[in-house]
Image (cartoon, rainbow, N blue to C red; front, side, top):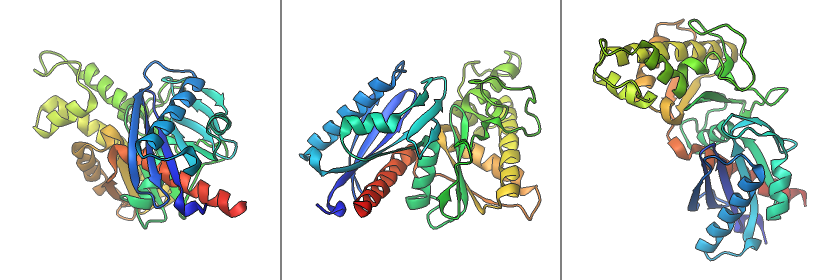
Length: 319
């Protein structure tokens, strides 16, 4: 069977959920599947869940396993793409040197590709999203933490140890310069990641300063900032300033024309607008365009689909 007549599955492995999507070789999504991974740390359990999800997706569409051409998965951590090994993930999963590609290929019997989840989102933004047609751009995922998918000359840049884009550890004005222990949030992440923004709010909060509750999350804080609430605006301003410094530094080094903001926090219009405002006052020669993701939470799984298509095509050409 020619590869263009088969199907692929893209997977987005998260610390709290696993999302899969079945697509044709043209990238059109036919069905989606989701399950909770909260509290699950064993890679073998995740592999089993992916297998169950693949079978369920095929069954929903009355398709046999024989039509599956490839699977690709995005994992939340440093990933050796060539070896198919997840070197390390966040504390939510705690994986170290997991041979995920080998485990999935043994279970599914088809070619598998593994990639960092932020990088899969960058793939999707470049193929069908906000960066379509742009050869040099950076995708910034701001959620619980912060990470970047760097695309240069149309290709993902991984770095020598597969950790390019781990910008949560960047040092910019206003961040702590204390050494960071393994597994702890980096300096930038501790201010601009969702948890860092929440911590900022809690450190400034007092009943005298605001009528809002102390336990707000980042997006709620930004919602209140849009209404003009003073303390929320203070936190927004600090977050946007810090993020803008990081973007400016990346733009100086990489000379990319475009940065795409994604993730639950990064997509918030208040952060986007405030960050643009800070950037506008910097060096006019370094003024990258700042767009919000057009794919939102579907970016990772869509990127995995396109990675799976590339894997299926390259396997067909080499056989």
